[in-house]
Image 1 (cartoon, rainbow, N blue to C red):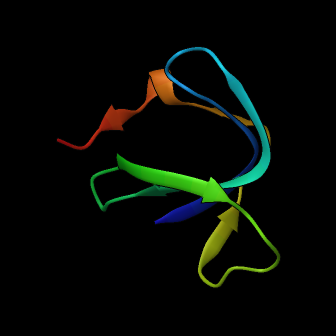
Image 2 (image 1 turned 90 degrees about the vertical axis):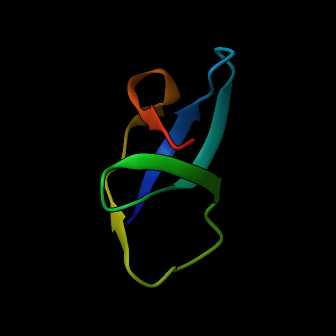
Length: 59
């Protein structure tokens, strides 16, 4: 699943300005993120800041 946010707070506390896309699997486990460059198919806009400290990290 792909969701877009204004920013992402990384595990070390660094705030990465976005917009960014956060990708998770069907169990909501974090797979990765990247900067959003224009429209991206199948991406839900959430807004706000995604905090990596609150997510399940995939092994």
